[in-house]
Amino acid sequence: MTIPGPARIEPLADDQLPDWMRDGPAILRVNIMKTLAHHPDLLKPWNRFAGHVMGYTSTLNGREREILILRTGWNHQSDYEWGQHVIIGRRSGLSDDEIMAIATWPKGGAWTEQETLLLTAADELYNDSQIGDATWAALRKHYDEKQMLDIVFAVGQYTLVCYTLKSARVQLDEGVGGLPDLKG
Image: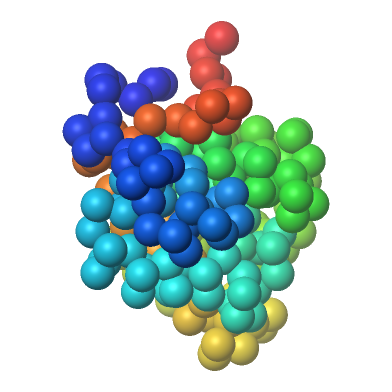
C-alpha cells in the first residue's frame, strides 16, 4: 500500500518552523511534526501528550509500547505510522521477524503471554473500541491500573495519529518505508 496522492497539507519548510522545532531534536522535523506545525495551538499540547505515550513518563516499556503502536498502524493500514515505528521498534528491541509477525498476527510470531494479550488488546480496541472482559482480566494479571490506562492510551493516541496521517496524506520521510507487501 502507498499513500494515495500528494499531501493535502504540505509540511512547513524548515525555515518556517518555530525556533523550538528548528533547534530541537531531529524528530521535531519529521513530516508529521512539520504538518502539525500549521496549528501551533494544537501541536504543543499534543506533543506533550505524545511524549508521555512514547515513553517519557509511560509505565509501559519500549517493547510493549511498540507492539501496540505497530499493531495499531497495521490495523489502520497507515504507511507512515508503520514505517516510522519499524525504526523505533527496532530500537526498542523488536527483531525484523517480530515486526513482520505483528503484521501477520495471529498467524505468526513466538509471543509471550503478555505480548499476545497486548496484540489482542490492540485488535479489540480497533474492532470494538474497547478491550473485552476476558482480555482485560488476563492483562490485569500482569499490569496495574496505570499500565492498563497506558495500554488504552497508546492505542488511542496512535489511532488519532493514523487518522491524521491518512486524512492529511502526510508523505513518508526520506529513507522510511511503508507497509510491507504481504502478497508478494
